[in-house]
Every structure is written in structure tokens, then in C-alpha cells.
Image (cartoon, rainbow, N blue to C red; front, top):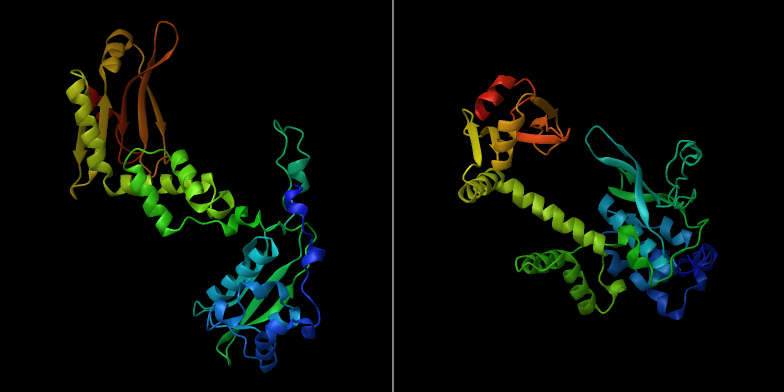
Length: 336
């Protein structure tokens, strides 16, 4: 916590006097006086990241944005310079599906409810408290006459220590895996390089963990998301190819599938040698253990199981069914 306590909200509160800008910020001061600071030309052309820590409430209330996305980009950049993270809060949408107003708050706004901290049946200690009821907010409203978003609320004070500059890249909203990082990761994954090794290489390339732009968990999540997409694109061909390869190596391996009138996979059943041997010895009891809607395709997954002479559960086969109303006798016909 000491690393995050090197700056306090009091240390980085924005100045209250517009005349306190240095001589290097004359252009910014003139644009504020003219009321010409807006969100149309992009953040860099308005102020620049180096000027965000000098913003006063008076400056912010003069700003205008041509879209909700630009307002979000501004406040997120401001939060990164100041040392905190933000999250989207309430928004109001009109009948034309136009965002009328949007509010952003500090990520440490809401305090954890006491009922979760005072549970008598808790088995583990609660996680460290991160939400402390911070009141920092930023809110914009769409002005119909101007056709732009204007700032209506802005509170810069925080009731918690702000992150030190070298810790800001580890805050959740300031981390992202770029398209270039994803492409490089995919290329290395094709050569069976582990995610941990890829992360170590990117850390060396960037010059440190604080310069990578994401943490190891973010990279793992990205890899898993890409794998799910690849599986979804060729899922049926992939599973049938896998079962076919198993049948070549296992003489008693058995699988069978049906397709519906639209040429989609309807039912699928498979059983290996061990399942056949167990069924021949312990087929006196056959139990259907069905789980519903626990996979990405919302198909019931059926496990045909029994009990061995040592009272251990054994599996006779598995099946994917089109829906939960499928006649169970059809599954037995598949197996028999």
C-alpha cells in the first residue's frame, strides 16, 4: 500500500486559480478564456496529457465534447495522469436512443455492504476493501441547441490515496492488450510458446512490467478468448476429427452422431474401451446424470454412469442432446 500512498488526493487537487498557469501554458489559458476548448479536435490538440494535471474546475466546466466517447476518453486520460481509475455509472437515454447524459465515477466509489463483511457463516476472510465511497465524479449532458455534450458536474477531490505514477499502468482501466500485442501473441502461440513465456518476452521488449500496458492475467484472458472463437468457428469439425483420431488408436472406441434437417449436429454419443469393459461388468445399475445449459451451446450434457464393486462411480458413456425433452431411450439405442 505504500507504493500507492506516495501521492494523496490533496497533493494532486487541481488548482483553483486560472492565473496560476505557467508561461508555457499561455495557449491553454487563451483557449479557455475564448471558450474554445472542445472535444472535436481530440485530446492532444486541446490540452495534451502534460496539461491535464493543471486543470481547474473552471477549465473543465468550459469544455465541450461532440460525443460520449470523447468525454470518456478525456476523463480516462485525466484519471491516468492523476493516479486513479474510473468506471461508467448512470446514463440517461431518450426515445431516439441518444445518450442524454452520462456520469463517470471513481472506481473506488461504492463501499462494500456491511452484510457481506459481517456474515457468521463465512469460511474465508473477506478480500481487502477497495471501495471507500469516493465522491469524485464527472458528468456530461447533451445540449440540443449546441449539438454537443457539456459538463454539468465535476468533483476532483478523493478521499483515498492516489496511485504513484509507476503504479498507474497496473490500474484496471489503464490496462489493455493492443491489436499488435494480440498478433504477436498469436504468432508465438502457433509455435507452442506458453503464455507465461510470452509475457516474459514482452516485458523484456517493453523495458519493464510498468511499460507493457497489461498484466499476466490480461494476456491469459486474451488467449482464452481467442481459443474460444477458434473453437466456435470450427467446433463440429474439430470434435468429429478428434473422435475419429481416437477411434484409430482405440479399437473399441465408439462414437455416433446425427444431423438435423438443416445439416446441423443434432445428437452426439461417445464411449471408449474402458467404458465398454466397465459396462460389461457393472451394467446392473445405469444412472442418467444430466446437466442443463452449462455449456456455450445450451445443450444438455448426459453422463451414463454406474457403480463398481468398490462403490466407485464409473462412466459408461457421454452424450450431447438437442434439448432436455429428448427421449432417453434414444440415448440407450445409441449405446446399444
